[in-house]
Amino acid sequence: MLEKITSVFTEKFAGQPTVFRSPGRINILGEHTDYNEGFVLPAAIDKSIYVAITKRADNQVTLFAGDFNESYTTDTEHIKPAAIQWPNYILGVVDQLQKEGHTIGGFNLVIDGDIPIGAGLSSSAAVECAVIFALNTIFELGVSRLQMVKLAQKAEHVFAGVHCGIMDQFASMFGKKDHAIKLDCRSLEYEYVPISFSGYSIVLFNTNVKHSLDSTEYNTRRKQCEEGVSIIAQNHPGVKSLRDVSMAMLKDNVAGVDSMIFKRCKYVVQENQRLLGACDDLKKGDVKALGKKMFETHRGLQYDYEVSCRELDFLVDFVKNNEDVAGARMVGGGFGGCTINLVRADAVEKLVEQISTAYLKEMNLPLSVYPVSVENGTCKM
Ligand code: GLA
Image (tube, rainbow, N blue to C red; front, side):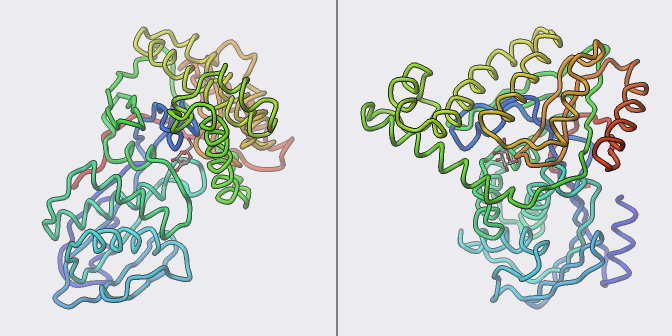
C-alpha cells in the first residue's frame, strides 16, 4: 500500500509525500456503551487507511481519493461540508483544528486504504485519525494523541452528522499489537489487555449490506438513552448517564413509564456489566466464557437495542451451535456490516465454506470473510 499510494501521489502532484496509516477496529464487547459513559473493549486491526501528504506554498487544499478515483479542491479559508461525502471526513478535521486556533496551510493529499466501507469497522474514524495525525505532524502543531482523538470525534459529529461516541477514534489512534483496549469512556482511563485466545482465530464475516437508516437510527438510540437518564434523574439527581444506573433503578423508574426506553437502557446497563466480566475472561484466556457473553450481547442488540438486521442475525444463528465457534456477534453501530467470530483455528476453513454457501443461498448475497490480526494504532510509515 505504501508503494501504491506513493506512486499515485507522484502521478498527481509534485514532490515526495510523507505517508501515514491509521487502522480500522473491531470491538470484542461493549457495543453502544461509549456514548453512555460506559466501557468498551476494541482493538485496532490489520486493515487501514493511508494518507500521502505534502505541504503547499499557497492555501489550496487538493484531495484525491484512490477508492473513488475522484478529486476535490478547496482552500483553507473556505473549509465547509462538501456535497459529496468522502472529503468531509478530511475537511471536518481541518475545521476542528482551525477552531482550536491552529494555522493549517495548504496541502496536497491522497487517501486510500483497505478497510471495507460500511462494514462496521470504522473506516471513517480511521480517515479522521490518519488525517489529523498527518496534519499534526507536517504542520508541527504539537497536539496530543488524546486531543487528536477528541477532535476527530467532533469532526464526525459536525461534518458527518453522526453523534458517535469516542470508541472508534480512540481505538484507531491508541491501538496496540495483540492487545485489546479496555477504555472507560467516562474518565478516558485505559488499560491494554493481551489478546491470547490460544487455538482460536478472530474471523469477520461481512454481510455486505448497510441499511440506509443507520445514522438516523444511531442518533435516535443516543437520544433514547438520554431520555432514560432524564426520567431517572427526576428521582436520582446524581445520575448523569446510564453509567450511573442500576437495573433496580431502571425497573423502579422507567419500566412503568416507557417500555421502549426501558428496553434500550436495559441493554446498555447489562452490556456494561457484561464487559467487566469479559475483561476477566480475556485476562484468564477463558475463550468459552468470553464467547458466551458475545452471543448474549448479540441477542441484546437484536431484541432490546434493535440495531441488528436479518443478515447479521442469520450469520450469528448459523454458528450458534457450532462447537468450533466460541462466540459471535454483530460489531459496530449495526444495521449491517460484519459479525465478529472466535473460531477454532483448525476449523476456520470448513466453517467459511459452509457459511458462505448458506449465506448466498438464503440471502442471495456474497459473504466476505476477513481473518484479522490485531495491530498498532495511527503512525507515520
Ligand atoms: C459506532 C460509533 C461508536 C460506537 C459504536 C457502537 O461505531 O462510531 O462510537 O457507538 O457505533 O458501539
